[in-house]
Image (cartoon, rainbow, N blue to C red; front, side, top):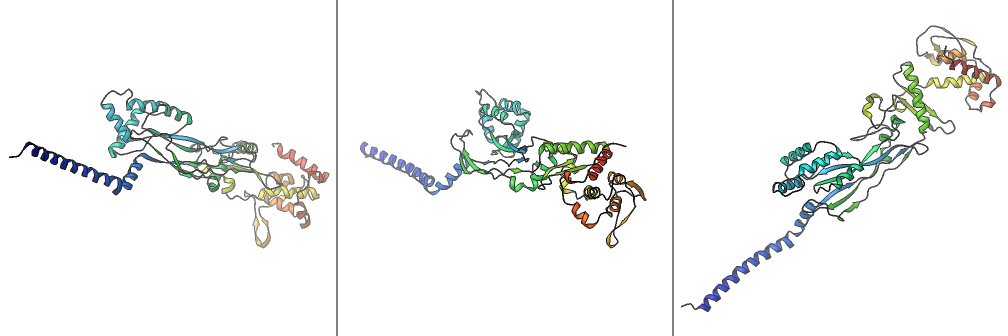
Length: 412
């Protein structure tokens, strides 16, 4: 017969055995977590709460010779959302007792950045249907710092933001064709494209942590690599001269019905380009307002024989040497024979034309200029090519230029 003490000892032994089995299970589980899979679980945990982000550097400025900014970088913000945390917020909302619903929060964001709160919610629900663990979506892109601050003050746990660089062109169309512009795929034309290596920034990397409720944890940002801003590109262009040149060719091209026009202003002393003007112009802030064929700079991309620019030097030599005056008469033939059987002509077909020297220059006749240039010896042509102060020209030469200026400036 089993005594009461023996029964008690058996129950105690059985209890101890059960307790030992339970403790053994806990120890095995603990060893598995803390030792066997410790590194794997730590990485998974960090991946869930550690969020990588890009630190964007600022693209370098483009400035004129006096430091006037033609292109610079500002920062805009993309307002983002975590759909999976929105799903949790909707679950809490379904239980009741919330003071602000998901729809209310999205309506508040939409009121600041523009858009439709209901459409935002529909997009989020669409992402969740495709992937319940989706952790990234956009509510609005490219908002201003002022809008960003207002969104941040809403303090919505599942709404985040990313700072993004944006390009602006403070002087609009001034040198717009030359400067170029950036598109969604990077630099597209002009100096933005040609000298991108100088202007582009190097982005950095950082991470931050957020809690189980999706809230970003203060003080957890760790910067792995700092961003490096792009270099400043200073041009020889003078923005004021550039503006004037653009206005001048736009006015003249419109008056004569030209399809396009270009003008270059060069400082003779050092060869620096002070203005490189194109018409039609492009505003890099609104490239859609310009036809695609006019987006670039024809000054540098369209080969065009600048033969007429040398005529002024030829006439300077003629007048200075006394070989011609503005009233001298000459016949401009249809074709003018040069060396090795080559011929030159004018931009338009014609028979023999009777011109004065002033008429040859006014009509930019290649053949007329060639006939007049026969009056110069090789030595005179060589000496005439050297720039001299105006005061050293002969009185006869200065008088001829003064008369020619009056003739060419007065409409017939």
